[in-house]
Length: 141
Image (cartoon, rainbow, N blue to C red; front, side, top):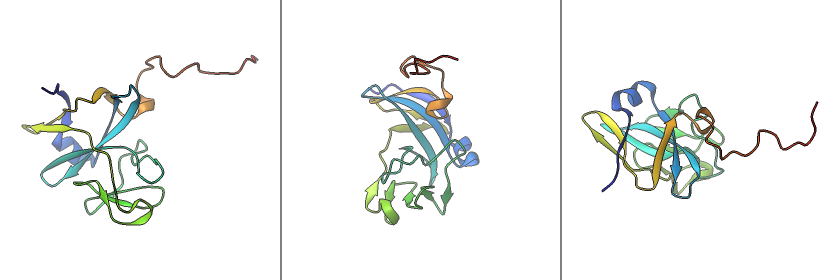
């Protein structure tokens, strides 16, 4: 059975047009995920364009128009419900999804291959010790 972690509400995602959070994936790497409005609920996608790994939400919310997520680099548009892109540089690709569940208006992370770390982007979380040294320089001033 999938463990569920409470994330936010459908209303919050709709009001803000998106919601960004960070997970640890099955490989142990941190990754960003966006929740976006879709029909009567929300969907969760990895926060990365399939063309050049451009972040779709750079910390200011996802750019959307007419139910499509817009890549800020080349303008490819992904359907917010299916993740599919039919135009631009990312044409004929689909955003990687993350499993969520919605119950009584609350959105839960429900993906066996993802562990919730924190709200916001990778850089917004506390240091978890895997980023290496702050500086690799041997010089001091």
